[in-house]
Length: 512
Ligand code: G3I
Image (cartoon, rainbow, N blue to C red; front, side):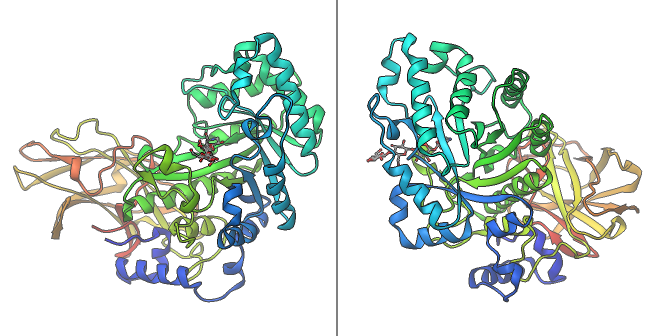
């Protein structure tokens, strides 16, 4: 099986999927045919859309010349991964050390980059003296720390993560020396102190797992609404976006960003990476690319999303393997500093071209999204939820479209019933049948083939969900756990193991 960035398939007509993958990979690695858009950096592409594209970095890495070269050229914004944190900048009470952070701001100045300051108040990487203070002294120590640091970096840092990770997963407030001493007031106090020290810096609250709608982002939404009502200086919300292939894409990220934007706040994706269980394979790599692409698309779609920062751009310097043993490969470039498919996905989403050029104007630019509507992998039915999205700029005639969802039959009858239970486009327009694969593969000896009797999918439009179901005519059991197209995600997400064909030609997905 080969990893193919599915959106490219449409350009290549009838080329076998595997060959297309090899071609596009080769082209992207060798630079491909020269054209202006192709040479644009990620930041230039983002800047053309009014956003920045940045990366985290750290002092030790800057001594790696090849690394620093890409950091300085491809990215328009950098964030110090560690060097502006409290344990580095005030390891002993009242003794400030900005040497490491100054190296970062110096690099940025040399390369015409902006700097997000990270971070003034955080429960982690906090020197032990802070936690040992009597609670009556914590506010003064916090205010002093913020004042010294934000004053030092005035003019060099354009945005501060003033408070980092204030919430637990369930949306309750995280305890910390600051919370313990001041309750939730520490957040407003910190923002006011930062504003007093640097009135020009954009002030953010930053957290992880607030990218999608959910309890934690609801808590952030309630907090920032209250702060704004009280007139506390606050400019934006940072969504870290430490995503993982195995956990699915955040639920309704764009809508979530938009609700913060609608409060009058900026939104920034501040620490994007997409880790996976190692070893990487084609399917995980395709899902990763799709997540990077979807984050980029969400930011582009929300005017107040000011930009995206990846939490370092290369697997060579990722925080992931040491924190999540067995996981990694989370970044846009591999350990040899070669761009990965996710890099192409971001480029394409930003409107750039790679490999053989962009395919946005191609007819038949469709993608499949899937969710699992079946809580049991071992019962007598398979229930895929499917929706198609037109990612191109021309309408697609649905009667030309077929979709394949691969599964294994197991023992029992060789005849099937299939059903469309519900779809906003009307199940009467959806055709479905089970087909035995000509060349059975592991996890894929049969497929559910879905088609349409008519209708047109406009650019950007989706069919909406199509609730599908199939069973064997003797109602014998399936084992879906090894089915090729099966996924456990219960929210719609791009599905690289479901193939879409227009006029019989593959336009999306990786065949088994
Ligand atoms: O510098 C010391 C080195 O001297 C020592 O030999 C080594 C041995 O452990 O540790 C080094 O410090 C490490 C530091 O990174 C610098 O590499 C720390 O142990 C390590 O814990 C620290 O990890 C950082 C992590 O935050 C700490 O929570 C990561 O680099 C940094 O990328 C990560 O960033 C956080 C964001 O600030 C907030 N959001 C989540 C994100 C990922 O965890």
